[in-house]
Amino acid sequence: MSAPYADLDSFGTEPTDRGRLLVRVHRPAPRTAVVVVAGEVDIRTAPHLAEVVECRLRGTGRVVVVDLTGVTFLAVAALKALRHLSLLARELGVTFLVDPGSSYSVRRLLELSPVDCIRPGYVAALVTTEVPAQRTRG
Image 1: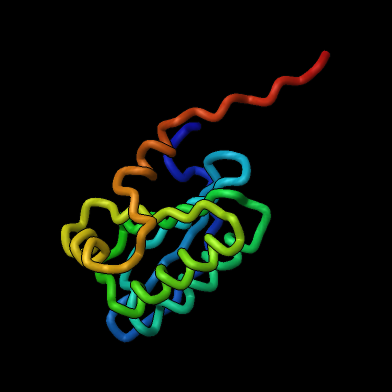
Image 2: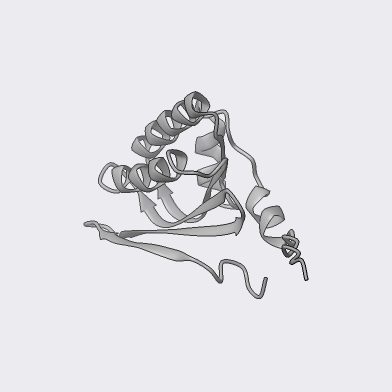
């Protein structure tokens, strides 16, 4: 892998009054999706994030990780969305993890929430893990 997130698929931006939310999907391994989030996740942008993540949960992947490293603001609406997504993932049999990144305020809010899928540092470990190339018969 050349650079972290070199194979990002952008799902656009959604402008808000105070900023914007950028959501992108990175696929570091087969059947694994990392949803990279940057900006503010509030009552206006949380539905957009939930929609992108829910599509990944209902897709063919078995692991979905939400990377909140680039989040500058996390509102209660985001916590509700993450809790809903966690319950949906459990129903669907998909592993669902949230990496809060290094932001103290994001980590603190997630620590106080009922979201039980928090895995600090998970994305960094996933990105640095090399995926073996498929062998071809010849």
